Amino acid sequence: MTTPQEELLPATRRALLHRIAVAQTEGRAPSLVAAVVRDGRAVWHGARTSVDGHGPDENVQYRIGSITKTFTAVLVLRLRDEGALDLGDPLEKHLPGTGAGEATIAELLAHSGGLAAESPAPWWERTPGSLRPELADVLGKRPLLHPVGRRHHYSNPGYTVLGALVEKLRGGSWEEVLRQEVLEPLGLNRTSGHPRVPHAGGWAVHPWADVMLAEPAEDLGRMAPAGQLWSTTGDLARFAAFLVKGDDRVLSHESVREMRGPAAPMEAADVADGAAYGLGLQIQHRDGRLLVGHSGSLPGFLANLTISVEDDVAAVVLANCTSGPLLAGVGADLVRVVAEAEPRIPEPWRPLSDVDASVLELAGQWYWGTHAFALRLTSDQGVSVEPLSGVGRRSRFRANGDGTWTGLEGYYAGESLRAVRRPDGTVSHLDLGSFVFTRQPYDEGAPVPGGVDQEGWRGIG
Image (cartoon, rainbow, N blue to C red):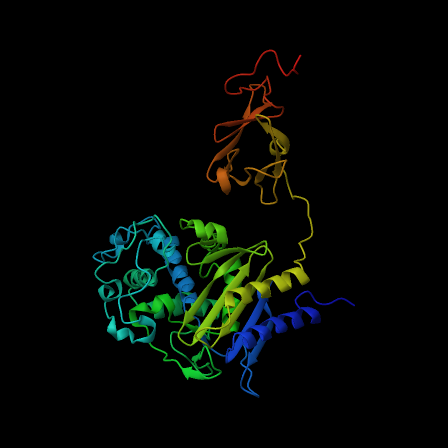
């Protein structure tokens, strides 16, 4: 008897429950709820609570804080894909007069626009948004603290500006645009700007005593695009699946993949920590895995969404306390537990349905100088070039339909690959961004730049 692939094994489920139980106990969270996604669907839900007889499920709302930023980023990428803006556009082109107009849309998405981390006092997360009715109230008298584009500096006002940009170009409120263009198409019916029953209450837990204090749940007003949303593990599980595969009703697979790529300058500490930031998504290298997602916090709530695209596993963790459990670590651990206990089963190998003989003859070993590379045909009609040593420059290449290919990643991203043929039609060499790749090291029969020593290869005599 075999276990259906969509179900987790009992030992895996127990390990997941143990991890959130430890997090809730050691983090002293009034409640903690989690979900795991595999192959595009939720395969596990778990909860721990301090209230006897009441266990929050996947439909109970928690405030998700800065995970809201990822939703806002999706709206901006939609505008880009429709041609309403370019990510390289300066903000001033679409939203003049902010004082931060030289920052580009991409820089604001990646928190590299030079803006301050927070709005001017009082503390915006614990005060009504009505205190900051205009963008000028959010940005303050000195919006830019750093040179634009030079460093990653997390900015809540930056995403407030992006929300205002969405409103300007769409002609509606940020929340209404989000509902129509993202929440409804993806079926995220339990995600909203204001809490809907059933929802958790937000609490502060005393650092030195096991007592609690109720936290206010303010309407953030202008700051909403940076952290307003309430959601559930069920909805965020569906959102995680979207961030892996895309959905043409909302955003294509190519655009969500673009969101997951590093887009901000990294500081030395970030390099050491293996951390980066994409377009509305945090990126972390942890336990040998590349993880993407976002964390969130507002007074009374903590949230985390963690995805391993390679493993096709994601985790959502929500808690109703201001501090305590470190949910980024919990989310990463939930992903690791499933990925290690039940590794992804690969799709069956299948031969290509068709192959061009002129491309097939390019497959095999090539040399750039004395460096050995292999060219392979890929299942998507492209090719890949990678060093035989396993170390060095590698890339997949997309076929252009004219006998050339364009690099998709790494050093060769955007570079052109083509086969150069002799008058008789035989292949002379490969030209990759002006580099000459030959069938033999420094092949005499190919136009190697600088020529080949006529005395040939020799030892020391």
